[in-house]
Length: 464
Image (tube, rainbow, N blue to C red; front, side, top):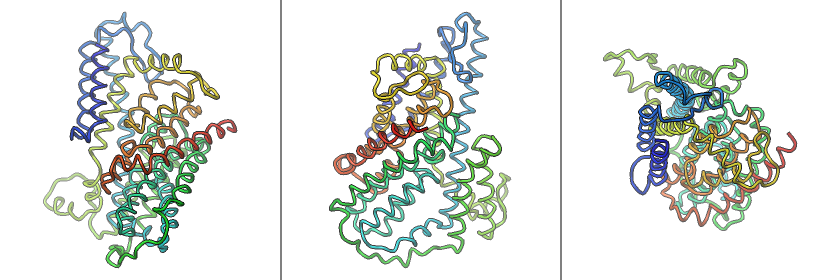
């Protein structure tokens, strides 16, 4: 039965990887393999010799000797545990996405565009790279990429030049997302999963992530694509449509940034702080839009009519629900493998087979090469299931350097291929960037940045 479940996972994973070829959205195979995996576990519960207790990070003693009802009870508790942990991540992401959409409703990001006055290609490159690095740490790398490419389309007229900027934005956004607990889905997973804390994440990863952005940007600034000046674009029509643009931008970003502070002070899960931030931002959004409050779910003709004018309802209708469902499917599918002890066993085998390179990490002595390969792997396949798998494979305590290395490697490694990160995929869609053009022009820059950051991390961890 375990072999069948692994096969289901591999086939589902393959379908996710080649979604552009088979024209099936990745959320579909993710949900299907999650449901089938747990169904097979339920049907074959008596045939499994061991069970992994995620709450205690160890195998359940004497599982094979337990009766059918006891095994079913353990399975139901495990399923509920994983659903709870997954829901924490999904609710957190829903809140963050809604706040960003509220900012966009008031055209808040046009405030950023008004700061860019220069026409020098090189200066514009540095401005966008630094903005991507900072913004991705605040509003996550996916959203930062969408925002900056949208602004880029209003500033750079020539698409052939614009795709070069988009490539460097992908590298900078992924680098910026790695050192912030809210900057990347995988880092958020590690943070919510109590593997890393905000302070240590910054201490370990800020310098490696900064170098991962600075080095490729510095090299690119001397390439022919960034020489000379940009053509002037008439942007009178792009003036902010709301007088509250700047206010909502700062309020929304401030709300998101306050979440780690809220967690530190109250010791509550991050999604609670995100819901508070969303509530505060929503109050001001409703007041500024000169409409009645409509945060309840009461169904009425007045409510339905008002929903079309409420910034909160409008923003909720714009968030990426397919991404939320994909995370649900993939995280719960990985949880199925973890519960059977498959990932736990695989981690042990991996550590025995892989040669040790450089300084050993603390705890179980996980090879640096394993984590570096995880980063390279995240460029080929989605980094979310890779990090989800690592959560079940390794048992190192909170803030062990292993988790920070995984956060860096999975977060920045995806830049090496355009399909390797959410930021890359969205940029590919927005600018119709060719896969092989990216490999030829941008991948080597991303690789250089990744390797420089890796070396910097290996040096930084010796100081902490």
